[in-house]
Structures are given as C-alpha cells and as structure tokens.
Length: 290
Image (cartoon, one colour):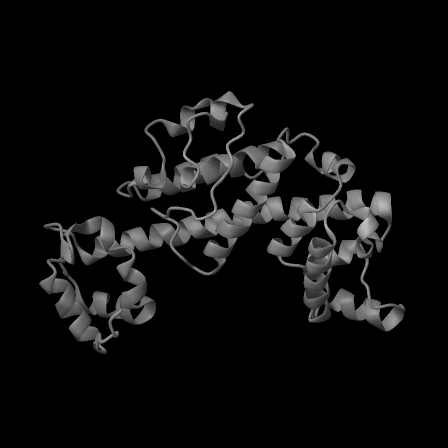
C-alpha cells in the first residue's frame, strides 16, 4: 500500500488538468460553475466512457458531453426512485393488511407468527424497535399520548421502518401470509425475496445520488426460470432491474408507465450509451415489456 499524496487543486487547476487530458472546454465560466456545484470527484465517474486511454479523452469530447451524461443519470435516478417507491408502498400496505388480518395489530412481536430462526426474529425486532423509537411522526406521538404500551400496531410500523427492514420483515413471513401478498405477481417466493433485496439496493443508490448508468450491480437478481421472456438476461445490469420493476408494477396494476418513462428519457438524451446499461436495440418491443 502507498500513501495518498494527491494535492488540493483549485477550480482553475482542475480545468487546466482536464484540458491537458484532451477534454474540450468551450465555455470556461460554465465549466467553473459546474465544478463548484457538482465537484470534480463526482464528475470523474462520468469521464471513463470518454477516455481513449488512461486519463486521456477521446478527440473532440467536450465538457458539455460529460455534463449531459451526468444529467441523464440524475434523471434516471429520480425515475428509478419514483418507480421503486410505488412497489415499496404496495408492499407496506400489503404486509400491514395481510399480517394484521391473521395475527392482529401486535402479532409481529411474537415469534410464533413468523417462520424463521430465533436469531433472525430478534434481529428484526431490534431493528423495528430502534427505528420506531426514534420516529417523530405525528401519528406516533398521538399513539404514545393516548394509548398504553410501547409497541405500535403493525400498520404504523410498516410506515416507519426503512425499506431494508421492511424487506427483512417480508423474508420471515410464513407461507400463508406471503401467498396473499404474492397473489397476482406469479413469482416464486425465493425470487421475489431476492428482487426486494435488489430494489432496496438500487433505492439506496438512487437516494444517495450515486451513479446508476453503466453500473454493475453488486446485488445480483435471480432470473425466474419459469418465465421464458426473462431467459438470457444478465443479472447485474440496470436493464434487468428495469424489466423486474416494470413486471411488478404491471402485476400490482399500478398505472405508472415505467417503460414509456424510460423511452422518453432516452429520447431526451439520444447520445447516451444504453448498451452500457444492458439495453439492446429494439428492447421496447420485446415480449418481456409487453
């Protein structure tokens, strides 16, 4: 290992460095403003597809090309977050309804109502207690002011806990409850649980303003073998995530047209390399998007 010795660069020095690396900067005041607003380091993730060799840009690549890709990725994250939000809200509502119908408002506090090991249950309950105890929601204050007991009813809990904890809660549900939630989705339990993990992972990327374009996903999706239209897809690119998202939204009858939103975004940014995200020519006409 070697010590990190890179020095501080002023904004003007950053511009000169980009010029040395063959990047065309037609409007220096514009570039200076963007470097102040976004930062060189964040933008550097979008340099890579424009390099001809290490730290050397392809001829005639402009600073505006970099900014366009950055803005595309920003809009992709917003679109992605909005789509996942609809799946997340569906899951919160479905768990609250199906679980409370079988086990009551506070049944989630008893391990007998779950199908899991003791350690997994204790881990889940600990997360729920930590997240609900620090909630500042008005409905939580109202409950605490008017009712006895420390535990909130399940329909309040699901509105407070993170998507990650919600996914953990789903993974320990017993088959009867899970079957109700999966009604109409037509996926094996282990596949849907994996997809929730992927959704949570991508949601966190989007929420923390990290790059989605050209990203290789660390959490890999399981491809349902019983659905021929999914056959042949790679499991670590945005395209597969997009197919999964579109499939779930259609299965739960959500009106959000994710496919059309993607088409409009690609139309707005025609120069963006969609293949770097796993998309193929004519993707929108494939059976899996029907």
